[in-house]
Length: 215
Length: 215
DNA sequence: CGAGCATGTGACCAATGGTAACATGAGTCA
DNA sequence: TGACTCATGTTACCATTGGTCACATGCTCG
Image (cartoon, rainbow over all chains, first blue to last red):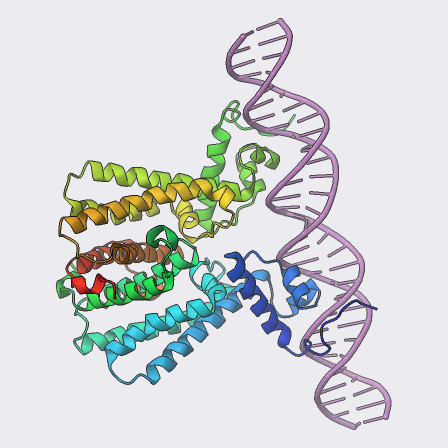
């Protein structure tokens, strides 16, 4: 008589995969790093660690699945927000970092894998790569629209994109790694991040076009 | 007769500690993550893995030592560059990201631990924390000098600092994780990074002071 | 020269990621 | 209904890893 099984039929129908991903994300968020053990995830799901290999080829594949899910979810949220926004390109652009940061607060575990994990093995991370490319494409397109509308300076869009992605990503990364206290004391870090991103974007918008032109 | 020993007396006098750190940084840079095994580091040094514990209390302590070294080295380079620069605060400020990015190219292995590793256990990472704080303090001070000199907009310095640290750190982080191709194609990434950081700083400098004022 | 201490060794341990052969149960089709 | 089958999960196993401990070795300094 095996002790204490999970609720019958809770797993055994595809739920295990999702459950493992959820548990993993929780642990990552809690511990600040993908430190979890496949065995502890399995135990939390009421399952043997070998069962996990029915759903993920390896530990790293689990991480890759999380990253892919994260980028797809992010892209979906961005697209949805833009859709209900209207046509103003500048407003649509500002929605992107806002959605990005909101999602980071919702799913910090996924975010850490998305941002700060070296996706070494192309094979297992192929899906994540594709998902990420979608999200980047949206940024690229929106920046282009802003430039065409004259609301962002002309010049090499790659530089503008890099600058915007840089601030957003950089602040997110600092927050995720708990490095924010050093720069900002102990105030409301998330508010400071939002305000800083906003101010930076405005500064870019109003900046001298010469800055972004190639040499 | 033990096979193939290291050159006699090469270790046994404090060199092992440094050698292990060097090897570890090489592996981190090569593999893009602190994947190395204590055993392989020890083997590369011609030593048993147990010997490593004479110099580092744990694997994580090795990482912490690398991070601490990195921040101390970074701070030293920044201070040196500023010292030979002169008194112009804006020039001194621009030196910081420049030194930062140059150091990243010199020591990508250390950088990855410095930026993208969760320093969970305060005990083992205490030294790294202290070293990092020094480096941040320099940025804070230089920004303050710029504001007093009227070359940076008044307003909450925390926001300006966050913005500058954000771009720099964000672009560095993207580069370290190989995410730069997505945004910039396959050009000279490091040049693009430098130019983008420079343009961003100029944009911040020339921006409307209202942007950085608290609400 | 001899003692002491830092450094390195060898044997050992529990835990981990991963594999393979076996078990079980839900759905399908005769 | 009953047999087949495939997905899912289990048991047992393996090599490797981080870590510890008692023991060896060899600088260094009194």
